[in-house]
Image (cartoon, rainbow, N blue to C red):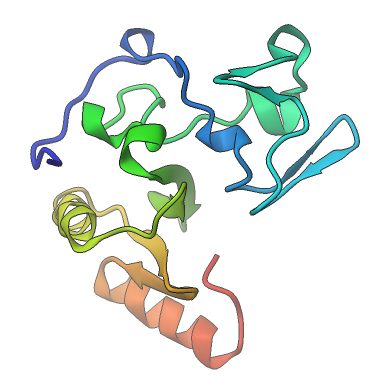
Length: 158
């Protein structure tokens, strides 16, 4: 069950451990000439680990930090991507933090979306998500208007 109260541990308290969601092909990147994208995991992903961890490149590897792992993460322990089945990716909207919920095995369910909506209302941080291939956004009215204008102009939400 997902906690409804955010936990705020420091990054030092959290480690990836055996979570390899960012390497499992849920996000896009190129690592030493090998493409990673949805459906194609990182060429260097081992069983529960990175086989080139000590020499992994800055981009996209070292610079990427999921929302669960980021310093002062507002996300509960249960939100570790391999446990949740959804990866929370930090992003920006205007000058504010925003988040993208990326499938890491499943689409966000109503329980997660309820938690994220409450978090968004409380923090002002909008978020994007995808369900059944359709993209959505949730946030303050100005965010909603901007996203609607993007959709009407045929632009991608993220």
